[in-house]
Length: 275
Image 1 (spheres, rainbow, N blue to C red):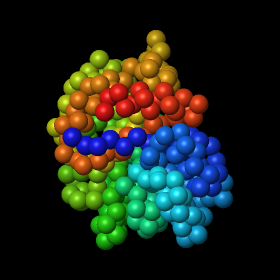
Image 2 (image 1 turned 30 degrees about the vertical axis):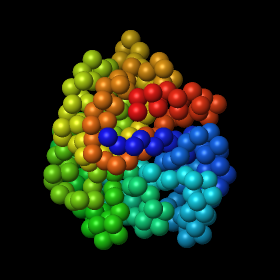
Image 3 (image 1 turned 90 degrees about the horizontal axis):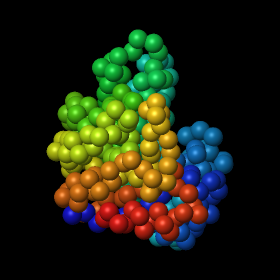
């Protein structure tokens, strides 16, 4: 059974320097973060703005506040069916050395919403584009010893445990792993099939999971997504953690997404109730 480490998405705490933000999450009781520089550090407008000095400041903040960077969030469109894909892959690749310097658990991304694709793009085509992007990225990740974490989402090119297993089998890289966002695999159509989803996740990908995302969601009468508190969520956390507790990983960060700082204490208590 893994030791679960409770963390938060850093940009839910607003903008500031790494030291300022790490101090806040540490004071609230979190021990890890998902760090996306472009979303929380005002001086970072592009990935080129992630300087050696900023990385050094981040490392100092990690040590000062006993915070682990579990995920370096580098969310770019690696499966987009247009000319921006190659630049997106290059941007992602540029952050691999940053991930290594920070000692981050992984560098993470989703795999492009199908709604963002040009008309007529199939999911099969999008997955092929994702694999082409990963083929650009993974050799360098392997050289540096950096783990790349990809996150399945029902509405994206990689939309299920089976689709994710297909991508991993295609790429065959020991450095390609999975970020498991429980709620992102649940929608209004499959909300009553969560036991099957967690079983598939465990059987197909269990040992590949390097981080877990924890957030609240429900659905309106038309099936639209509603963002909720953890207590009001339709996500079956108990079922998901019954699977996660069986895994062999020594540790797993569990990161509160859409964190509300004022609710940190109750959210942490709620999350730890499933550990």
